[in-house]
Length: 245
Image 1 (cartoon, rainbow, N blue to C red):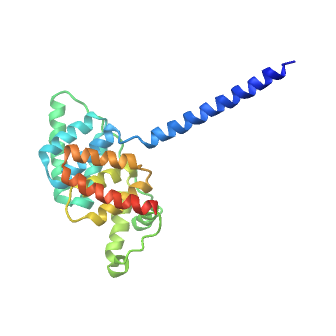
Image 2 (tube, rainbow, N blue to C red; image 1 turned 90 degrees about the vertical axis):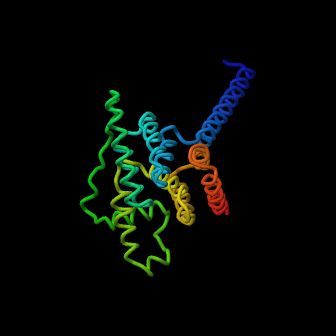
């Protein structure tokens, strides 16, 4: 029979093991929480930012870096699709033409970039507006209830049906990547701080963390501009304050 002393020792060791395991688990969770953007996500930031401001030379560099970081051809195409909803067709089309040139140059150098996943067909059993309403509600966290929805109902239909249904409903770029791209584009545009604030909130709703948001701003500061990064930092501070309250 084990002695009383050995039983006590077993209990102490078990308790110590549980404590160490608990600390390790908390430490691992905290580490994950504090992780910034991946290299792939950082390249989404620069591709979106330079598409939005029309700096095609820097966009060309960002596209090469994005492909080297593991973004597929179809994922980058989808970033341009996302961008046209925020920066307009001219910027998006200029980006696509720049991307075509980058791919031609890489092919001549013997680089074969993976095409990646094509978007699945949208659900056949619901309209774009029905799908978009579901997606918008999920991203915002509640049904949209802005004054413009009654003042200009047609724009609400376009937002739900086209932006959130036809575009966000495409599954070859996840919601987090779409929000990283959108926030980065808005950060590099003037006069859109209300929309930038809204998309920070949506980004958090998709599961992006504060550390990832700050990492996004660091990329803006180092590769886009301090002015844009400073403005984006102020908007993030406002969002974080509202979340804590």
